[in-house]
Length: 627
Picture 1 (spheres, rainbow, N blue to C red):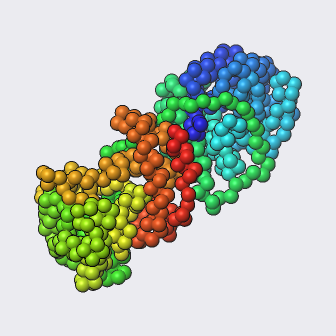
Picture 2: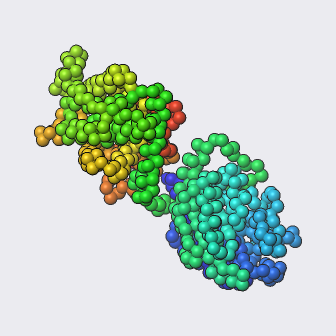
Picture 3: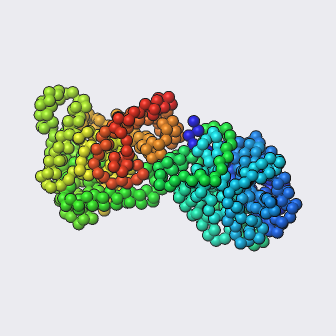
């Protein structure tokens, strides 16, 4: 499986204006180098065989014949190279001169795409492209398609559908993308002036984001005439609004990037409001043998921005979304809030968000009723942190031990208290929820849920226990992000005791504390020992739910991201656990409480994940087993 990964490149070779033979050799050398590096899609600048600054020499038959002749040699020379490439040249058709881009692969001229939008200077020489596709005689006497509405499709990777638009008008890309093109190649030839490359970058980013495509821009560079300007060889590759590679002006380098075309299809299949338009667009197939290529750099924690400043900004935005959502719900009902506080990450974040919401409403924090409910597994560390945090934040605090009530419950149902099984654990979780619900009735408040997205995805929660609340503020926050949000509050806090407590909570192992502590009084039940590392599960969640990638692709990407931490068998083990739990635990998510969406992954049965509770995991599990 290729998994949709392919390497694309943009290159501006050194050239001589009007010297077609020299230019052809430079282009051929670059194609050879690209082929050795595993590049499969390569874009050269506009009019790259002749140079874009030939002026009235474009009227010379010698130049036109020379370009055609060298193109024929280039097509023949590259027959054994597995690179789809485009090259520009002036082409005389039916007495009209066109600025065209040739698409070439495997010793064949696949099609010729004329430029549509011409500048005032260009219109002195060239005729704008007509609307439609026609057949013309190619350089070998056969026929080739000529027109702007051509899409070149790789038979071995149907996601690789290449469209071409020449120049910076960005006029053809919308039609081509709506007709299925996933890659747009844009050969250009514009002189560098102050701000020109920044403007092109902005347009390329916008185009790739708007049309959900890969956009490859290739600008003319060294060798063009400097009579009235200078050409910088600006190259870039963008995908869905993100710059993947960029050769700065006068950088004298190629831009290369591995692009994920399955990701493009995944994004598009969710966008159903824009219909596909295939009218008059001609699909031309080519057969390119493909093999596994190197992967791009893959972030270990896809929910977490790698840039520190961006992470701080993201945390501030998420906190604002959570707190203002809760503020709206509390204002609508006109009530206080009740929270179960354990001294763990999730309940800590929920409390911090609730305090922020009350401050926004200018309401007394004493209307936040926090309840610590020590049980059989509660340690002094977590209990003390919970108490300290509540006292420092100025909220109301109650302590209700669940030991007597759960002990009585075990006697009522005939459960051996020494048998620490699922009944032993879930009875405690449900007792805590009952206490919170009843205190909410006493105080006229609502219970604020603390469970996070990772726990809900895996079903690592007790049905009608911590799975249930009246409003869940953390339901769209993955566990790895919860940690960074708590850290954000700690670093932003001007209360030294609060910050110290939050940092200690961050250092505490993740645990539901439902089993007795060890002989040292420390946490014995560690969630990640049972369900798996949240770093891995959040990776699986992001790519399985956000993009619908296959288990095989997720495994390959995860191995590339985490190979120096987890071995193959460990990743396989927890990937299989992920799919098993994700499918069997949907019934818990089908009745999850209201809560704000935060990012692109949501489990809400109303606005996020819509999935039957009895869906079968067989296909996914089988692929995971065969890895």
